[in-house]
Image (tube, rainbow, N blue to C red; front, side, top):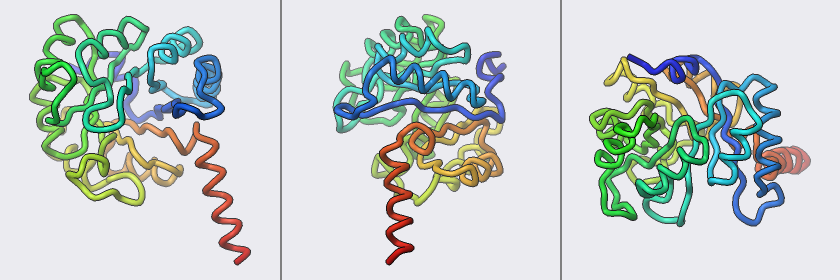
Length: 228
C-alpha cells in the first residue's frame, strides 16, 4: 500500500529548490524563502539538498520535504552512503532521495543494503534512476518512489532535450503499481503536462522554476537569436 504522504503527491507538482556552490542564492535562508514561495504557488512537496537547506526549508513549509545530500561530483554523489541518508532524515527530510545505480558507494554498501537499513528505521526512500535496470533494482529493494532523475547522466542512456519520456513510460509500464516520478529537464509547463500524459505519478521541476541564472540564459539566447 502506498504511504499516505506519497499518495498525497499523485498528479501534483514537486519543486526542486537547489543552488550550486558559489552561486548568489547559495544560502539556507534564501532556499527556504524560495521553497515557501513555491509552496504558495501550489507545490505539493519540496526537493532540496544539504543538511542546512533541509532543516531551514522544513522549518518554513508545511508540505513534505524530499531531502538529499550531494557530496563529490563523480559516480554516486547523491546521498552516497547510509550515513548521508540518515543525516538527511535527522535534518528533517520526510523522504530521502538516493542514487539507485549499481555504482560503488562511499561506504561499500550496495543500494539494496542501504534501503533495507533505512526502511528498518522507518524512512521513506526515493530512488534516483538513470535506466530501466536502475528502476528494477529500486523496486526490488523496496523503494517507495522511483524517479527518472539521473536519466542522461549515468552513461546508460543518451541525454534527451527534455524529460526522458521513453524511460518514464517504460518504468510505468513495467511497474504499474509503483509511484514513478518524472524529474530531469522538465523546463516548461508543456514538458510537465507531457510527463503526466506519459504516466508520471508526479512531476519534479527544478531549474525551470528555481534557477534564475539558467532561465535568464534561455531568454537571452532567444532574444539574441531573434535579433540575429
